[in-house]
Image 1 (cartoon, rainbow, N blue to C red):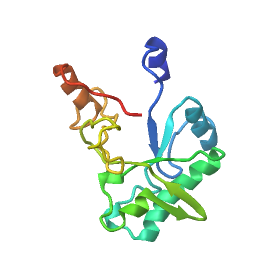
Image 2 (cartoon, rainbow, N blue to C red):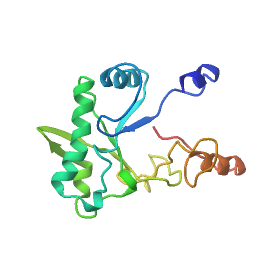
Image 3 (cartoon, rainbow, N blue to C red):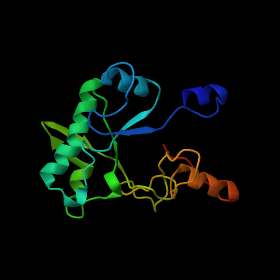
Length: 172
């Protein structure tokens, strides 16, 4: 992204990296250095749960542990960075305990996800639109290489290119 930004400076460096426990960002430096590098560049760190759990089968305690572990780890490694977004593993929430995904406490620290993202979906209304529910927000995954995978980035870029009359906004 940085290389692309150098060539196209009007393409801003921003985005969200949704992470699991400690199995993220292979490369040079410590986990702390890698996280702080991204934050310093203006990227957001989001929660994707500790073990990529299916929330529909989880208890309150398990939900709090899964969400809280990542929130606490990032806060500790970055000297207090607060995660405010969570991408649901498999795009699945919990019908009974949805409120514990949004906010809770684990090991003495609280967490609050102001935005909860579904998976493999369509572009959405602007964040300012009354139809937008930030706790059940569709997301378009930026993966799939240079081919269209249903509902991922290249799928939607192809549709946008074929329909230039439609307006798509970025919300961040």
